[in-house]
Image (cartoon, rainbow, N blue to C red; front, top):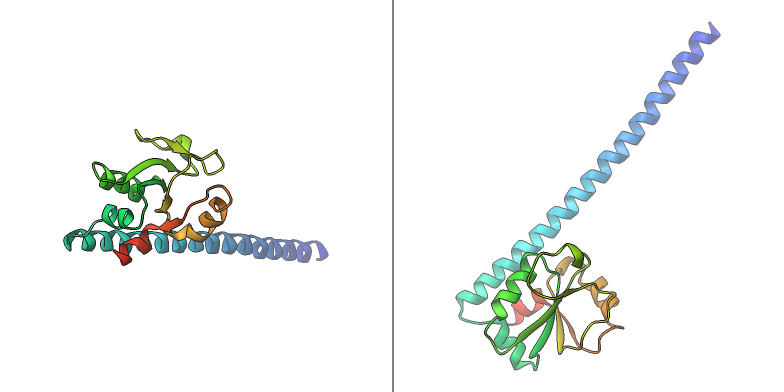
Length: 158
């Protein structure tokens, strides 16, 4: 009788522990999915604002030039970063290089540095990775003596 009761208790405890582990894993995955959804929504809204700016006949290059930023670096070499490089081609503002945590995995013709590399001087850094802006400012502020700007903010100020 004791043996049977111990087996039942062991099985019940094992099931409870298993359910707890599965539950925590599901919650972690749910939080990760929510975070990615929030990031993609923020990116979509920023890109939508970019389209509106273009439709109004305004440009990021004019904004940057008017504020004295003739040579910039672009932080974040995903879609928005590549689009910013393309937008600045043949304008008075030069995108000198990119900065990205995954610089080794970025496929582009542009020069791309990792944040911890020695970064050449520029007039400003434009951050396209908008959901990590505060962390990026903290990381770069001691390395470069120039303003660190959010592309999102620029698009709403243009």
